Length: 338
Ligand code: P6P
View 1 (cartoon, rainbow, N blue to C red):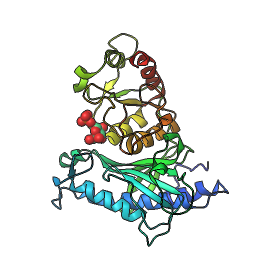
View 2 (cartoon, helix red, strand yellow; view 1 turned 90 degrees about the horizontal axis):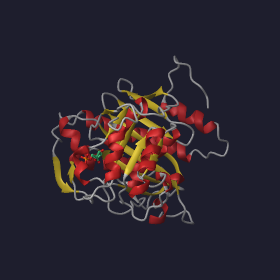
View 3 (cartoon, helix red, strand yellow; view 1 turned 180 degrees about the horizontal axis):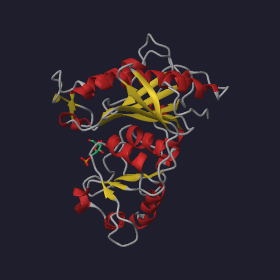
View 4 (cartoon, rainbow, N blue to C red; view 1 turned 60 degrees about the vertical axis):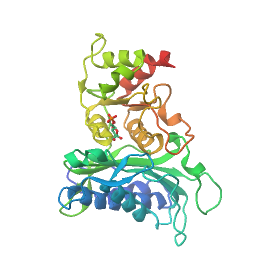
């Protein structure tokens, strides 16, 4: 990988071109997807930054396929991504948390060899209280034959098949963090020039976590092995330095802090939600891909998360995500929780 001196100003476009140049077989289609996603991220960032000012706070009134109240920004972010991605000729289908089925490429546009899955605005219930929210995306190569429209089979692939994944965090600054399987790289948006600039090259996450992100209001619904694991993370059983509990309630914000500082995000199954809450395909898998590329790990409590073969587009999964040692400990302590 080309290394950049601390003083060089590297835009995301330059970085993508330089990365592509290292792979002679690259056709530029994946690069095109990343360019277009960066444009969509800038557009969503502009909307999020003005959320409190142009009176688009509050629920749109409509509900999404999850039966959750759609904040207006959810609807807007979803439309922005679809419109930014549907005409580039690189995708044969898309899937979104906000849409029940797969999203077809409009007939006037060419289909490509990739599919894009995304959560357009995760954590959107936090918008009204100015807590960071995020976009999460995952790119797979189509598996169905032909060059026409994609099918559900193209999106229902295990996370290990991802060719790229990443997220955008709309926080104190807007950052885009992605990987194409060659390390994890972070770009910070300079709003004065409208460019994402390389700010965090080759992110590595500490093997042992400092932060524990969990909503322990569900403790009464956890199994005993999960309760024991949380006692371990908190140092209550004397086998570990206590972790600092940090839980924003916005997956991208919690994950990003843990990725940089070391930590584990856990959303176990519980009696109310036997499969957990988070969506496998467009929340868990992309962040698991990032975690592994940064030296971390991800599990559903039973197996490596990226090995899970999905059955449904919106299926949920328990999630243990982040620092390698802490995720491995979870898998070990939950062995009896089968
Ligand atoms: P809980 C936000 O609604 C979200 O999907 C994630 O961003 C967040 O990590 C999780 O749900 C929070 O869930 O049950 O703790 O409120």
